[in-house]
Length: 457
Image 1: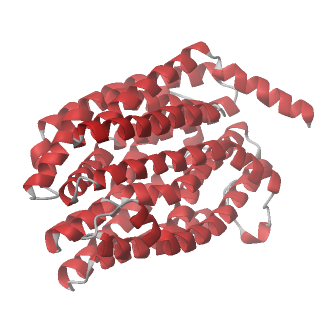
Image 2: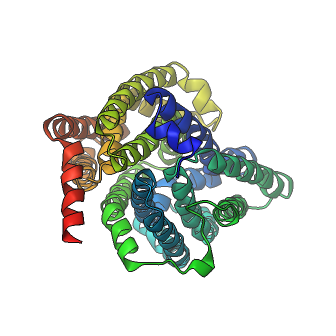
Image 3: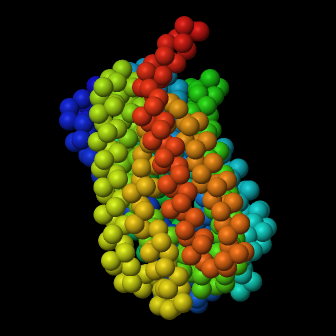
């Protein structure tokens, strides 16, 4: 199963392999981020402030419902990368087939649940009454396309796990441009409501999912997906769930905590909702290079451990950690320096702009600490130890963050208290992660566990 993409990660220059693998992911993530960002910007230009606030407040609730299955997709990627690195064609095909079938059923389930629960979740979050009708409209149409999101993420994870980060990029470029064009058509030209922005996103998401599945089915590779193979295995599903469930639980609970945070933001009114939502868009774009490096690190570690190249795995993680921390700090400084024009790109509401710039002042310079947490978590997932990131992030980013906000907001009654919870909890998680990284032998723990599994068989 030798091929150029595999050699890029398992052989040759470590830094070059990781960077070349991460760059298409970065470009793809930029275009993926354009989905919701395009909705927000175009709605902000052509519709009311209330409709803009409705779109910018969507992230935490959307991730609450899709985060769990996103974690399962991570588990699938780890399993597939390991079998790909080890050259096990039978297990590779079974894992790919099982992942796609699971994604189909999970996506349908999530679409139904999302559409039905949307108004109840928005009311529970304390969404301001003036934006509630628009939020309900937007979310219901958005969740109609969640089926495609889940299926795309699963398929994209498969391609990246085998070292193909270019084709997911091509599909995202196409679907993102399609989304922007439809946004202008539906909202700008036809003057439809905020629901039309979600409809444009839904159509685009289906396009990217279809292209990704076509790639898996059309080309003859060791990981080709063919319905007639009937390679679904409960043993493969269990392995995927075993690696992905901790990340899925982690994503869902963190998203739940963020929904609680959003509830506190909502209590400060429409302008704060719009301002915090605007900063979330900027932060999402700003942190994309770090996110992509962490994705590359998970695949790199998993493939090299599967190939029993332990020293290479360790060297690659050191390179990734240093790069991510430096990049994050540079990005944070640039965000501080150019915060006003960046915020002004999304909204001209002075009160909302003040909130977004205040949040940037509190959080941006601590991006390096957040990058450290994400990197070590990605390394441990690639090494087959997803429980550690789950427990650390649940403790710091959920329990500590919610407790911090719940105690201090009623006392101080200032929105900056909510924003300060992020750097505090990022710092705590990074300290704990560093202890695990330097004080545990995660490489040889993996090898011992694999030998034990083989002995049991």
